[in-house]
Length: 238
Image 1 (cartoon, rainbow, N blue to C red):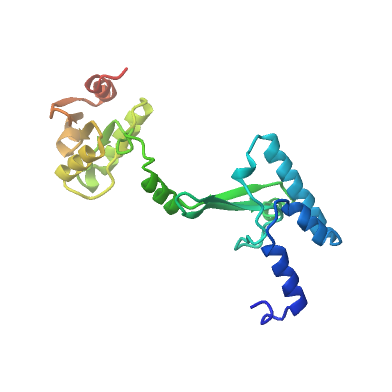
Image 2: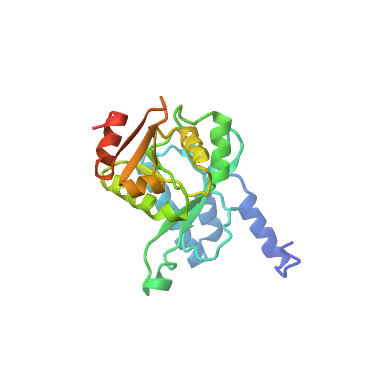
């Protein structure tokens, strides 16, 4: 493939020797092979510095390896690149990134030392599935109140109630889909939300909010100004 792209056969042979040679001291091997090239010598010194920092942070040598066959698909990297590999089970790379000092400079006008990585979320989920790494309460929610929405005419008031409860320190979610109230309450129950706030046209006109506690079906209507206090009482929170 490289020869077809115009590289001399001698150069291709040397490249293949560099990337396929197995050795316990890869940086020493690379140094001997490329020490005459200033750019390569500088890169090897940088890798030696990196190895020194890994040792300083007590990272075991069994946890990392220098792989000279690795490449990234983007051309803005200015230093070492890296990947995180899962070997048991054999899922391959789950993160990848590197150093790109000049990328921020495109916007800032000066080089800024920068290192970043991206995560392979799907592979991480596969890993968690494979090793059963999910916590027991993963299906729960931190939301304490779900505010329902009857229609477009009541949506603004529902949003205002949501903001009021949040301002009072209550973790509140506004239902965003156009579904019947029964479906909204069922959705809150399925997510594990303990309380729903029902705010229809009648409640808005009367200046009240109806709360329903899903654990026992208890319903209670209170004045709008008492909403936050009522939530705390119904949920037994301070």
